[in-house]
Length: 345
Ligand code: H2U
Ligand code: ZN
Image 1 (cartoon, rainbow, N blue to C red):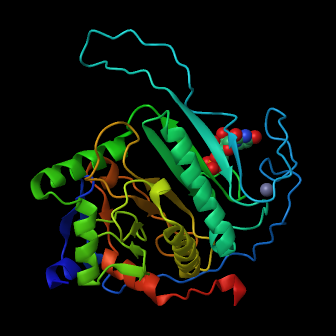
Image 2 (cartoon, rainbow, N blue to C red; image 1 turned 90 degrees about the horizontal axis):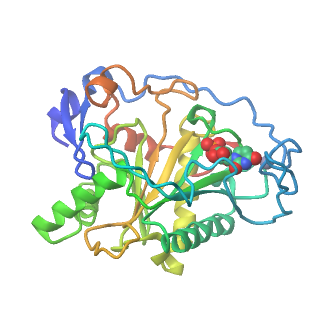
Image 3 (spheres, rainbow, N blue to C red; image 1 turned 135 degrees about the vertical axis):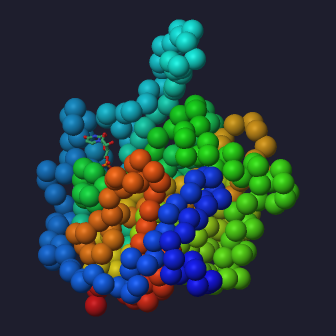
């Protein structure tokens, strides 16, 4: 890596969104200044009678959950999107544009066990979650243009319940983030006739500066343009447009890779690492999307310890995102920690 990028303030361009980010490596000459503090020992029970996601318990509104033994999907009792909405009358002013939107929201329980998280689940059980993600995208993708599968993990991310779960929001519109990725990938394809992320992955594999972990089918890396301190991207090596297209072998390895790399996350600060993660694949309409490549983003907020998080405030809100720790330092840190979970040693 060239010295100016490791020592001097500079900006990096996010090829996937078109945004810029300010990097200030001179503010952390040493990659590691923070102290580590472990969680108080996590004493969550396997079953919590108060939890609205545990098997057999009632949710808000009184609907009981079945006594599920694997994964469990239900329609969100407080959905942000609805399948039927009134058409809006167009406002004649160009400054007050609006748009009707149709959609639906679901919740996925990853496990009946209240006390587990993905990295602490068995590989076969993580594989079951992957299969549910794929089925849900296939099913909802038949009616909705965009199906956003995501997980919000940890109180700091505003997650309301520690029971391992994720969400799916499907909509007939393309939300902002995928819309930016669509624009950038389409423009790159237009210019080079190859998928942007396929080229990007090849170059990252050659440079070997930001790779966290890789196997036969998958690569986890800290993107060159990462904004969150330990942000990562997970990509298949093969050109895959959407998650349901993954082969058995790719799904099996994905389960292993998720366990390995989420364990590394937990080991960085010896805490259950909070994050928002989600999958991006080609939109589900009739359009042609050869320029798309399936990938997952992980956005963890922690910066220096289990309690010190990065705030996207001030200059970030009014100027642009900024980071001190370089993506290369973050990747090195993630490579350095063990793949054996700290609670299991
Ligand atoms: P978080 O992952 O951000 O904590 O959200 C959990 C979701 O669960 C949230 O969208 C839903 C909330 O609307 N929920 C139900 O659908 N039923 C309930 O009984 C409580 C929470
Ligand atoms: Zn529970």
